[in-house]
Amino acid sequence: MMDKDMITYLIIGLLIGFIVSFVSTNLISPKARKYAKVKQELDQTKDELIAQKQMIAKHFSHSAEILDNMAKDFRRLYQHMAENSSQFMDSDKVHSLDFDSNSDLDEKKEITLDKQPRDYS
Image 1 (cartoon, one colour):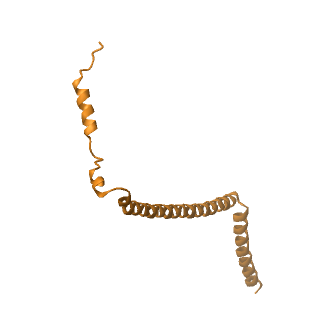
Image 2: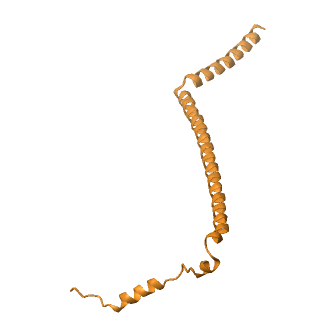
């Protein structure tokens, strides 16, 4: 019986020894410390990345809101100008204005084409 109890205690002692040595080597070893440090840096970097993504999303959301407000204000300005332009100009004068006319430009081209360039050589 003594031998059987002794073998049982020996096996239990070996198991406890393996467990304690495994835990102590992982806690004390340089690789384990390096791994813990790298894991901490990784977690910190992930948190910073998440915070940066949230800031970027908030920035673009705010920018989109500002652009939307600008578009609405531009539409209001355009409608205001369209509605009130008839008060300041007669309708027959509005049609007589020709902003696409290039008559002045054509006359200048004709003048410059009539003159010969000077030869300085």
